[in-house]
Image (cartoon, rainbow, N blue to C red; front, side):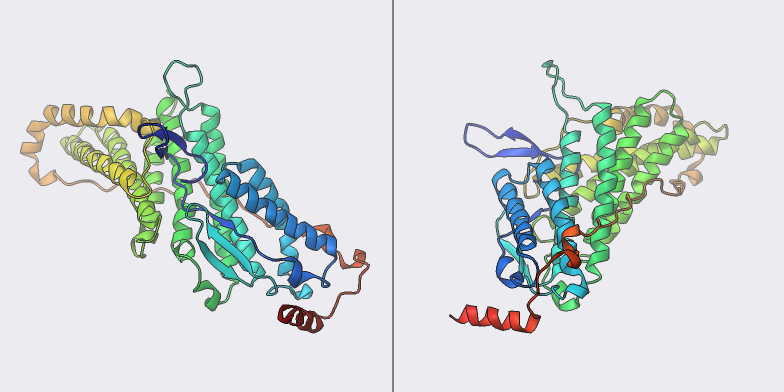
Length: 413
């Protein structure tokens, strides 16, 4: 799944491997071979047509040959192609609907869309860049044994870089949503469910939630981070995944990766909620009133129950097709999988008498609400390539009507 997965063999040689997933990467779409030469010939300089066609073909070949794993090469080619592609979307050029752009699913190879609209191509390119960015973040977060000791770890630098990539990916997806609004409804109806309302919002928010998850891991490992900081991060993470789950829960997610995506969000939502109640309980337990301790124990017990549910949700996610595996426990959850059961048991015994005496107070307290800290990186489309400067073309463009007539004649011969 995606290009940033660490592969582990299932059994003997030749058998399929199961990828590890830390950052979830939805199903990736790649361009399929499309004819740019014939529709654009005579309307723009031939060297511009050649550059467009060459770059697109390069992206197709690299994506197919590497399964999308050549992230740096693909992203560089996509960004160069993007500045050229923008020219096709400009109304003054009159080329918006001339080329039929084809895209297919990377894993199945099945063609998903064939649309004669330059804005569709622009949207698809940016979506692919976003998925590649999520995939790169996943690669960075897969623990590696660099020392040969058998202990797999993720360096702090990799975690920081992963957060940066997640914010960028969130910004790319946000940009996709804005471009989607430019397309007419009849074209949008032909899109795969990956582009339906709610899915893109969930992906963008999910990336922010995973960035916060990494930050919470940093806070847990830091002796300087206070309980208040840890609780705030856990609550923010919960809000992000709650929002993502809200966007997906009302949709038909039975397609391809849809069911797995929903399972991932549910798993992360339960983990975040367990962490939020655990840290909220620790802060309440600092109070001196019996009610504070009773509320704290309620939080710890709730955290324990949620942690158990999250383990089941993780297993469900891993077994939902396409089958994946989760890496060794990391970050906050590595700490909390030990601490939550331990503290819940100890505090329940310590304040058992209060739970009996203050039965009326045995209600799970509300979690505090916080303003969210992370936001998608602002993404601005690149400047149009200078090759689109008409003053430098030095050619007499063929009128569009004549061009279309010539193309029809050529097709009929």
